[in-house]
Length: 156
Image 1: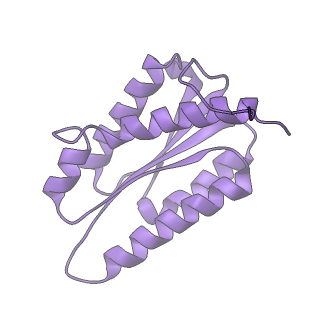
Image 2: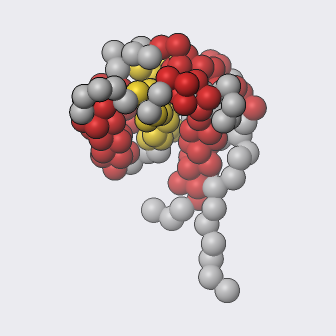
């Protein structure tokens, strides 16, 4: 039988950072509330969480990389919202945020979780921020908890 490594949802050790975009704040603020709720439910007290605000989703990767590499955080949770408009600006911002956040995780060697909504309409974003389709900020925080616990179990 092979050795199986999995994370779980037990209270994780360490501090957590939320990097949250101010742009589309009406949506992102709900993601932040969802993430804080999830962390509390999994044993992470508010005094172990730092909230860092950035202008928009495009700026999340740089800040996430800095936070992750600081050695202060067990995980960084990136929260933002990009809504499609009439130009291709959406494609550039969404792609840069996704790729940059992934690169930040690899550079920092700690979980850097992608909690950026990429939606066609404001209505879709509102639904994914807690109105009808769950809260993706909550889900991102749960992912961070699981990854922190998994990385704590992996060799090396």
